[in-house]
Length: 334
Image (cartoon, rainbow, N blue to C red; front, top):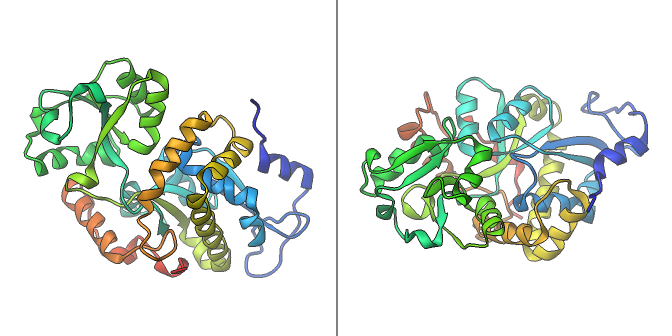
């Protein structure tokens, strides 16, 4: 079914961009005065992204004076680079590659991580008989060189009593891992369980199990909102408005997963089938780890833990403290 190209069509119908006065004269506006804002995802649309489309559908961004365009991504690293180069206003990106990007000089910052329990995992078909890290001994695991999962895999093995050479790692590009597992070319893959597992199950008709890094000694913060430091400096009110709408979108989507995924089916393009979306979002919601606060509100200890792990195992240089990477003032306790 053809999905509505919601925001792109809206921009065309609204016609030419009007000038906007106030704190940010450079931010384009619609004819009715809303600020035109772009969000680039960490990947092509999957269930984790449904809250953004739900926020569009329910008018949460519109209520904050925002006309939001959602763009697909090609990996968190590319999304972070797009934010750094001001090719997009906001990015939805994984935290470990953001730390590395900032360490190389990119002028970006997190204004709140939403998936506080990291989705990093080792995934495999249930019939492989794997239930604990030790069962990976002698197995082949597909991974993508350069990403944080790949970089920390040897340390995760060591933390679970395995040597690096106990497991054979097969280098695969990010897009090829799902097919490699589905076709039996590897025993397991490194990836985000809430994204890939439902996709593989839909392709193969077989159940997928996984070992979460976070459940086996290595939790790193997951995806959240990334902003260019220039945007924080020139229009902090826009950032606050975007974060408020995003927090509300996630909070409400978590309460009504069917409605959130319905909104995604209506407004997104090239998204997975509805049943896959429902499974993906259902798996993502517990990763928010809400403890009475709003989505995206982070305990500093989680940042310290992630920074320490990246320093020890992923060659994060001159790490510094959480404030180097994260501005906590943009999220409300809610």
